[in-house]
Length: 139
Image (cartoon, rainbow, N blue to C red; front, top):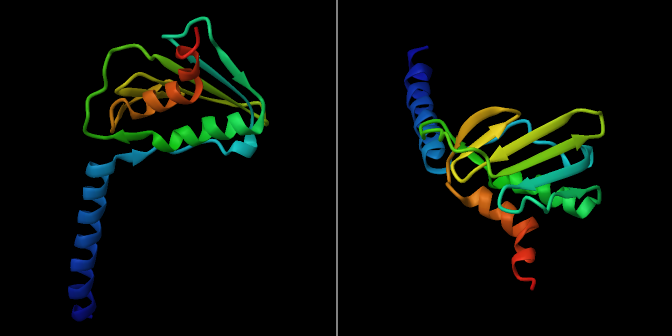
């Protein structure tokens, strides 16, 4: 009985170390993301483009809006800022519920709960580029 315990302790210690290193290096992915097939409509608002609210019901843009969440990792050790959100994305689901993701460059609010973003600016820049950047090139 002692031999398995001696083997189990280094394995568990290695797993804890690897998990901690991964969280510190990459952050934690968000949980509770919607699946594209469960989303009926997406509404995207951007503070820098106040007159350009995007609403999508087509599969291509819904899939893009859902896939942007894969760039959103939170950090348990970074500070949450007091700055207001610059982007607000509302995922209206087919079952009648909705999921709201609001963010600035360093903080994300998931259904109203603030979390520090691990990789500053990435999610913000990806959302801007995906849905609003083409307007900057016009006229």
